[in-house]
Amino acid sequence: MKETLIFDLSREGRRGTRLGSPDVPVTPAGQIIPERYLRSKPADLPELPESEVVRHFVRLSNLNYHVDKNMYPLGSCTMKYNPKINDYTSGLDGFTAIHPLQPQKTAQGSLKLMYELSEMLCEIAGMAAVTLQPAAGAHGELTGILLIKKYHEPLGEKRDKLLVVDSAHGTNPASAAIANYEIVSVNSNAEGRTDIEDLKVKLTPDVAALMLTNPNTLGLFEKEILTIEKLVHENGSLLYMDGANMNALMGITRPGDMGFDIVHYNLHKTFSAPHGGGGPGSGPVGVCEKLVPFLPVPVIEKTEENGRTCYTMNMNKPESIGRMMNFYGNFGVLVRAYTYIRMLGADGARRVSENAIVNANYLLSRLLKKFDLPYPKPVMHEFCLSGDRQKKQHNVRTLDIAKRLLDYGFHAPTIYFPLIVSEALMVEPTETETRETLDAFADALLKIADEAENNPELVLNAPVKTPVKRLDEALASRKLNVCCPGC
Ligand SMILES: *Cc1c(COP(=O)(O)O)cnc(C)c1O
Image (cartoon, rainbow, N blue to C red):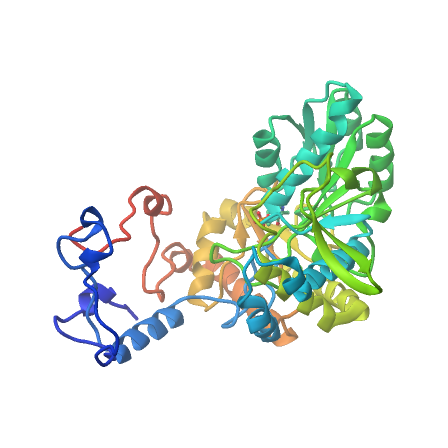
């Protein structure tokens, strides 16, 4: 199962396809490029025939784990299967062969797509307007927080605190800190939801906003959301929703109807753009009416010109917070999300969320035989188990269980997050998994729980079937060696 580095497969003089001699005069590089930029010796590139290059990368892709191979149960990440038609449409020449600086008149199709995608996202979340610019969920958070700042500025009040619930994703306090806010943590209650009494204490006049994830990272719906909304608004603060968990809500309920002022969407989660390999992502932000003037520029608008519909980019928004990205965001992701929503239609979008919820609750009901659930069910689209029992009784940690899952051919769930669950094992199956796949995953986890009881060494020494075993997870980022051997 080991794959050799491509540099070690190299043999001097081996070549792929070679082109014939050019039929135009050849100019030596030295006559075009200044001497100081030229290499003194040839680049140290591996030398292989095309066939060996292809086989090397196909073998690597087989060693890799990806959502086209099997279920990817990472909680919070919504690793659903990404329909191939999204790649087809985003690869169409009309979308890939345009330049971001070409005249708007010649890019009407792309502008129309962005305009309509914004409209659809507005409808899904019940917001007044959407910007498609932010490049990720975290970037959407930062955009939202800058909007909050811009809203409070002219009111002349000193509001330098942001409230974040303790079950929140780490990006929430990180984004707040980047925007120069003081972060105040609000406790969760015994049910795993926002502790209203604690919220009341912390909602002081200097609070700019509350950031809330609904359903939260435990997969629990904030049942008291209308009470929370009232408290926050009565305090003159704004209500921000981390919408990364929108996969549980589509067509069922809307952040706008719950009174959220701002919400970000993760197109690469809920709306099926592939992710996990480092991007690109997209984190559009929706806002309520009073925040519309502050949205980033350019704003895509639909106008009528001589009886013809025309889409334009408006830079002239004096109250705007400015740009959050060069050009208009990660356009290819926008095409994928647009395709996904159009393919589903309104009923389909609702079915996505309903099936995501059913799948999560089914899987949970099977796993409860062996694992503890620290906060009461039912859950929405994901759940967070605790490996406390296995740790206390058998000295097997959640990390060991996650490693053992690799031997059974599954990607591990999210572990040790959210921070309020000890030995957390957080699972989000998504709607795209069949009952058979869910059962196979449940069987594997239950078997590992049995092993932890009866043969803990098996779990403690896992994985045994992967090409590499337990790696020092911090070392790779400290000792980078991405170049050729000997460099
Ligand atoms: C993924 C996620 C984020 C951050 O989104 P990115 O696109 O990874 O920046 C924020 N909050 C929650 C709950 C998430 O699951």
